[in-house]
Length: 293
Image 1: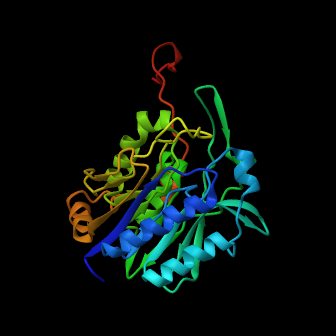
Image 2: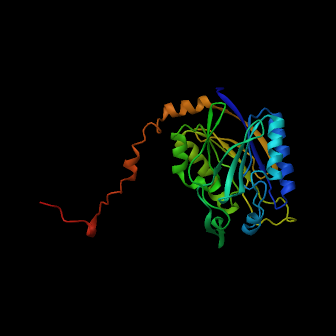
Image 3: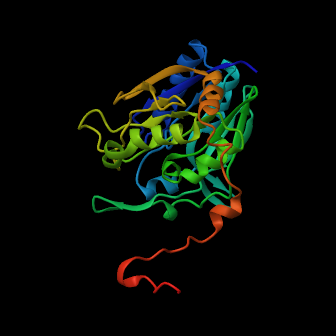
């Protein structure tokens, strides 16, 4: 296993024009491969970003033409591609799936997003459960002996998922996103740095970004700022608000080992039943019980 892995971090303005989105994805995969990436990670909803109704109607199966084109490019460029999140039409319903495309162009597997974005932000309701079903469990990706934990967007707000992936061996956490602009401005950098720091793992988070011009009105504007963060919480790359960009980041896995040796938090975890024990309540003042004498 190499101590350094080169990962292509991507970002673009995704629209409802799926063929245009695909062309951007293909171009950025090629640029990342030219720069020596062995793995390229694409944003959530990078192939289609619209309203819930539009995304549900445009849900793709894994043998859809657009997906097969990404498989062809992955094989042609000999890189592993993680299609960071697409509305995936299956026999069991629609999922938000991160598809893993191997170097030979085959789909090696997928992670189905566990936490659906059912929230109201700025008076607007985001009801992801009206589009997709939640996944069943965590997934680790092994690329040449390097372990990547697969997560998607809203998963970042559930630190127990990242912790379970890290405890199971993840050295890098992938978090493709289409993060709402208003919450991104408030929380994005902090959340990603926190997931890196508490798990002493790299975080690589490709992202979609809002329209660069008033000519196109987004169904909802997204924040951009695709990030790569070190195990010590340092921002290694930030693609800002670029409407189409890729940066290959070198991840030195020795830094993961060093950070975890310095702060052995994963080794310090208690048994699972300890955390499942209901908290005791200690009351003070008028609510306190009289001491037993």
